[in-house]
Length: 468
Image (cartoon, rainbow, N blue to C red; front, side, top):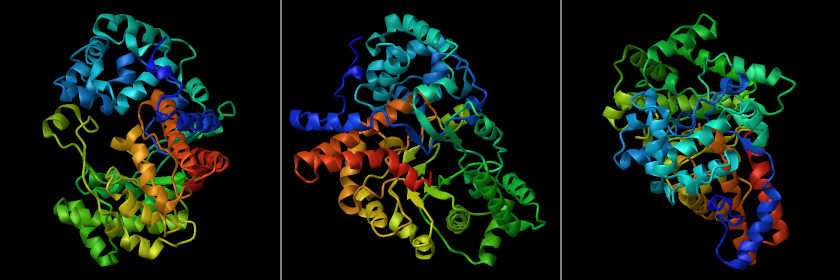
């Protein structure tokens, strides 16, 4: 097999001397366990050890990183079976993908896929051509059908020690409980409290969701007070069932401290469906502040993922649903937005806030300075459009001079594509090795210290930031 995915120096510096240092640094962390504190794999798939169905359903249709680029090239999403579309068979969709495989040269998606094909499936990506599509499909299907190719076995094969999921606040977390109680299953699969559908007035079913939260509180309070009690109660439930963090996919990074009467009035408008967009954003900003206050009390780490216009193409949303590739980033003002929250909780004992961004302009201007002063703030790793080799290297260069290495969240893969997890984490480790190798070559850190730093970045940083 001659795939470039097997080259031992992939992502390392071109300079031979610096590359040699990077090799040594990467070797020190290559086999460390995978700590994945933010992602979107379904815990029930692991608990039930569900067999993967076919190559298209596993690798193509649910991966909007992949399908959005094919759509840009003129491939209708129904040809890729996106959103449950059955206009084509899985094999036909696979042929479409193979026909367009050259489009992925130079992309992060292409890098992950090459690694998956070679390392997980034993398939040379050089064989991904239209004329060999059926043969590759059959080879992948044969691998998928093997009795040992199940989620639990792959967790061990991939070296995953911690895997966090993203969960509805009212989920019963039964799958997590089964995994935690299983003595034969060593990894930790942790739930994450994700309240977005319960804090955004514009989310489908907001009023019904809020009513369910009020009922969940069980304390007899109604309205805004019952709603707050419901959120606090469900956060406690999640913590009791293993959660270490809450995740907030807010529109902006704004936080707002309202008095009770103002917040209750906004909540009433949201329940009635009469709130303006500005009022909805104000309530979301207020709830971000409120949940920071709750985090000080219950200890859940607060992760923040703002800055994305969601589902920007109405026709695609109507035909295929959300999370199908038409989300577009925009610039975010973290320093101004987070000021009310940090003024009250930024130095609170035990409070951890991890802001993530896909706006590269704020790496050195806002994110690093915030983490360089507030003991509560950790720098979130590159996310979504930025979890790519060059962007990760730019990130590390941008934040380190202000924050050093100790304020990092550790890498997050943020993926639904289970088999891409090891490839993504290895890419991050190679980027960290490359950056540190340059510092060694420039006599800015010793190689001995670089070894300590890369182990900290890969292993200790996520444990520290996420209280593992």
